[in-house]
Image (cartoon, rainbow, N blue to C red; front, side):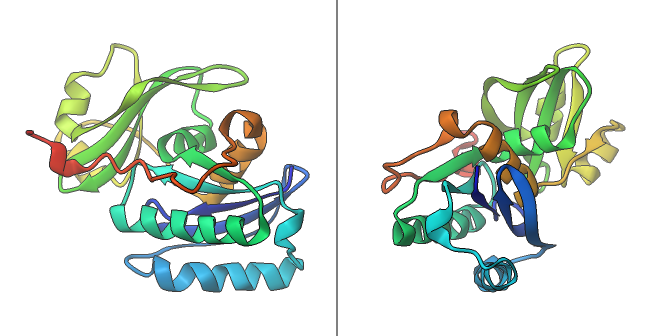
Length: 214
């Protein structure tokens, strides 16, 4: 499977190329409000380094959310442009699933948290099996404290960016890091389940925090 993967749903901005399911090249950096500027530069640098031909790809994988409103729009818009120009499909990948998948947690149930702002986080439970990471329920957006209150017994916590609220609650958790590497690997492994050939109306999974309290 030949996949170009994009991660912009978080402060991490990255792009990775997979050929035959294996990572060939990656350009990635933790940025703040520079994704629109840096992503095209990363792509051009990677394309030059790998002699990339978009038409030879099986698809463009993109981190689809939940995550940063602006980052999600930047990533999906760029991915759509590349896919449309080469007449290839998109492979939207859940940001939380990719985080959990890439962190290789121990077997069992784990709650993956992604910081939004202040003490608010996106969260979802996953069941980790020997050969699969399976979502359980839908993502939710609420305070970190509320996520912990509803945590089933025996469930571990995996997070990105929630250090401060977790420390205030005296709670330890495993560190995760979003990456185009995880997005691409997941897209290669689950291509048939995730691929979207009619992607023109595809929207990011914003899960707007403004819905809280409505």
